[in-house]
Image (cartoon, rainbow, N blue to C red):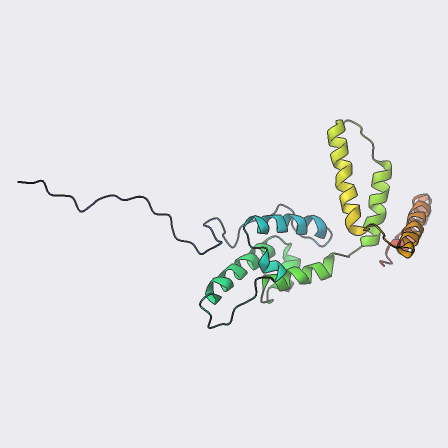
Length: 204
């Protein structure tokens, strides 16, 4: 009598099906950056958050290049799921005092744009001044040559963000004028700290 062929044949292990562009690690409450947005660190936060979101191939949800399809489109459910995931990532990467004011926005792009508008230019003149001072006074100290260069390069790159290279005569004139103001403020005695803060508070 021929042996019965078992019907319990074990086939190749199947991976759980996930939507296109998604993975099991894309949990909505995932901590996407160690830099929590607190209102004063927008540049570092935005760079870190964008790198993570880009690594998950979902940058189009913060840039708006992935448009929301009509509600009756078969792809709308997936779009909504991805959008909500990115929204949750962003909100979980902010201090509660900031995220609570963004809870009722509809898309990840609205959150991204609102935060950029609110915080990308806050105290930019003061930060510009601070960077000029830090660069001018930075010393190698106990750092290796490579560490010293990396630390300085980081500040140069941040300065480039707040003060892009001028390309016109008028732009160069304004940058020269600003540099002289910074040099003047840097030399003031401590008793004039209030005046220094007032000048740097006039963000232009």
